Length: 103
Image (tube, rainbow, N blue to C red):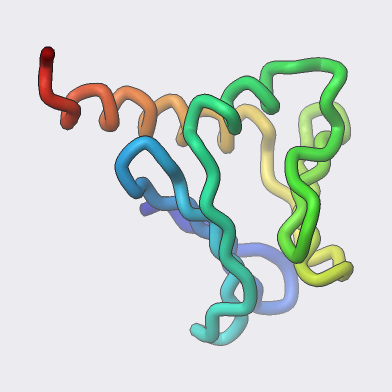
């Protein structure tokens, strides 16, 4: 699991769940919002220059140049680097391929 400390005590985390990832936002150790997505779908959205909003709903990620803005329940809570987020997604994709049985 990877955590990013954001502004005003918010924490954004990403963890693996098989072929999916779980994206969570915490404030003061309380879970505020959580989202499950397929790893490859997230990877494609990050790489696609025409996609500026990764998700709709209570947890939204917006690409603004090299930055990824995180919004929870309609409120901006912080920014992380797109490259750092993509690097962590790549690590999780690699890990998910290692744990899958060969056919």
